[in-house]
Length: 373
Image (cartoon, rainbow, N blue to C red; front, side, top):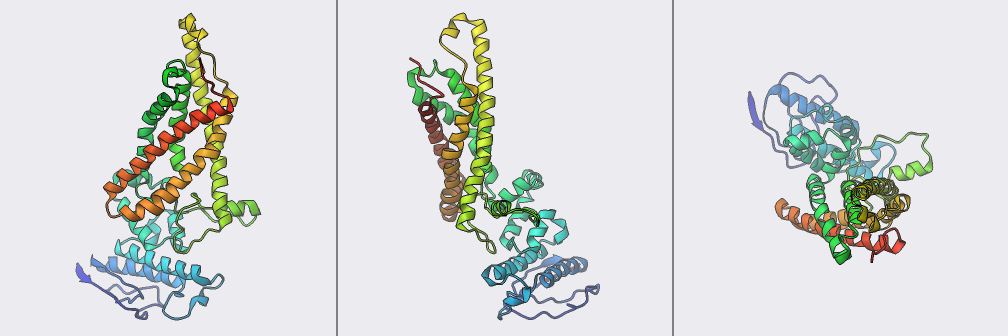
């Protein structure tokens, strides 16, 4: 066991076996143009981690050095190429610090690291989350991986949304319907069931992500290319080495709106069918109940809810996740995760309650749910 600690605080050119991939079986000093700290490792461990860092550094190009070498990477150039070069270097250092090889990462994440789309801070977040049994399991799925890498409290947001939706929905229904609450209980059941189904997806779709999508096919059309480059949240902060045009950010709203229309319509369809089934059961048991209630219009109610999701819910959740949480709350409270989580709970509870009030008004306005005298 060789125990050592290396600290590099200034840019120093490479020297070592840079032109020979067969590194000798003994410690070899590798000087990289960035800070590196490795401690408590065996000879084999040192060789593996530094070899991986050298390989990625050589493959990715050294355009981000102190000179004007940004043109050595072929096509591209500009600030974005330089940022991607720095991302690649930082990510490989993070791998070396954790004693990991690039091949040990999920395939899509490894490809993003090689392409310079993932900075070192994201890699360190990935390693930290792997220490949790639950998060390590969720990180196996690309959808969760993209969202957790962008926001390590994404799971907490899901739990918050799911936990408050029933209570806020019921409270909002009671406030809006007041003395008609019992008479319109069928409407209440339909709205709560629909809210449970859609609540999860309203957090999922507009959540900021670290994109790990596979490359787009060369035969893809212009529309596919436009939406491929769109962020998942129109207002999310772009990582270094990534940028979004105004058209792509608008496209994020359109794309999420299309998804939410399908989800909202389908969820409302299920909720309305369940409610109608409950009404029919009550009618069969209590003949006087049929005089007070009638089946809900399935198609019109479902389509109305889909439109509501596109026009109202889509924008609300885009603003909530991309502006209020990522751009305001997180920069202010990122040092204290407990207070940050409490802030998320507060704003998401208020947002869910407000959304419930808006749906009742919207449903009555379009005529799918009318007041009962």
